Length: 240
Ligand SMILES: [Zn+2]
Image 1 (cartoon, rainbow, N blue to C red):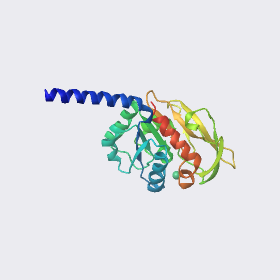
Image 2: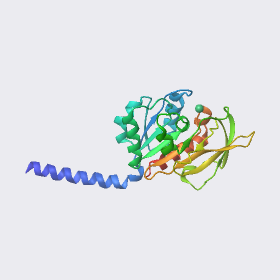
Image 3: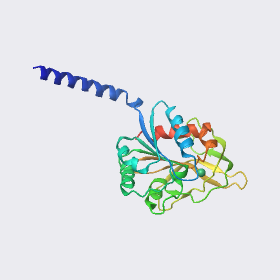
Image 4: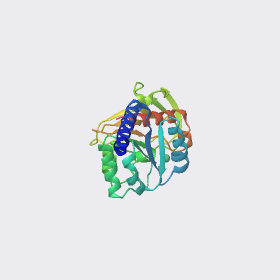
């Protein structure tokens, strides 16, 4: 009798919980893992400390940071968004497969600056599927102009139509054999006028994937437009 009562009470409690969970779906935390590490960048300062603070300012992000590629595997099952910024080797086959499985389940990928470079010659599927291209060069670090191409897109909400930033303008190139991309913002070299996509969405049958070439150092990570982009991208990537 006692046991039955307890089970009944437990059942009622659980039903209550799932009702609450359904009502609070909008406010559900966005469980995020930032992966940094590699060369040429102060990953700890900008991709961990600065970006973690930026993402947490949304009031929705639960953020962890790692530079240990192998720690992706035990964490990925509990994530909504995987934010890659690392350019260190990604040779663990199980980790590679886990990232593809994560995308196939319809989760979010946020690929920023070093992660949209062609880093991994032994893993061409990464660039083709997630970035639909990549970069093999960039302008010398300096000021350039960014123009929003699609102001109606939620990722561009609150981002100025045009802004200047001191960063590396990546020579981002579309892979002709990769999936279509939707360019949301374009960077322009102020001297020679050459333009390159700086923010785009890579079409994927299931996942929401945002690629951002900006982010070399604090001039980007502390730039209000970059912060807004990052926050919007996280929320959008988590929504599928
Ligand atoms: Zn850089």
